[in-house]
Image (tube, rainbow, N blue to C red; front, side, top):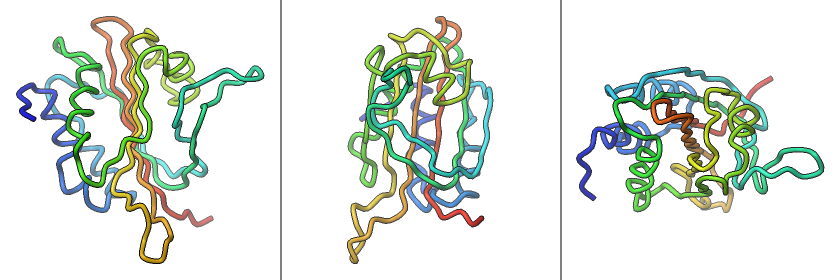
Length: 196
């Protein structure tokens, strides 16, 4: 695929570096990786963080309200290192364009598998994604403009002994409050044992 927009530069850094396709599950590597993403004149960093997490829920389905509680239709839980960052999209680019570029670059990549995707209202309540899932009120926007993706990275289906290796997940969420206030939020979660 030929890619000539500035937004493709961002996603080339995200996807096509040896850092991502190497041993990204290590905490220090994830931190270094996330620091490299805040480049380009079309993205302004809003917030970033890195932390150890236990049983962190990764949504693999839409958010639904059931018995008065918001929950994912399907999900998995991972203990490990979580790195997250939020950027505001600038200069006439849209958050939807960035997610589309990412989708196009990842669809044929080896060692990358799309686990879940949703667009617009099919994702569920935008306010719940912003506040409950990501804890970032700034991500609350128009429900019809939201995008969510979960990718499995560097994950073999099994080892020679039949035991699955550590999981690494890339989560991408795009939101649009107004035409001038659009955001992309990325989380990188690498599974590892946490010592008490």
